[in-house]
Image 1 (tube, helix red, strand yellow):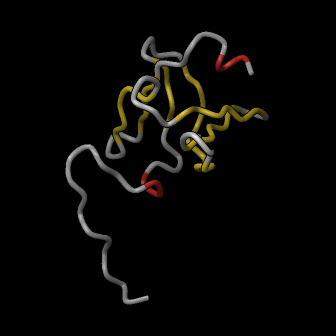
Image 2 (spheres, rainbow, N blue to C red):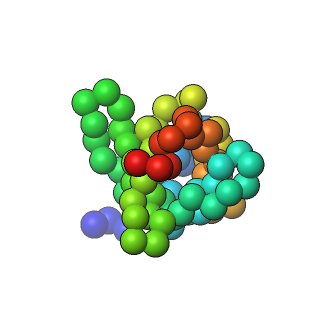
Amino acid sequence: MSGRAAPELPPGQFYIADLEGCRVVTEEGSEVGIFLRVEHGPAQDLWVVGAGDREHLIPAVADVVVEVNPAGRTIVIRPPQGLLDL
């Protein structure tokens, strides 16, 4: 590796590596878990969020992912009813 920093991204874009370890919460402030990784699905990517011994698969779509703040280490989601019960 050359040791060069990754290029700066435009506002609203981010590197997935910057999300690892971010807190994931609902719009209401309920704790969902910690962002672990991305799984690539046929329709859209799924963000894997660890919650104790469980993992939630969060569709990485604008209707669900409300805010991504890598600097603040938080991700805010609007999960459809029942998503976090799966």
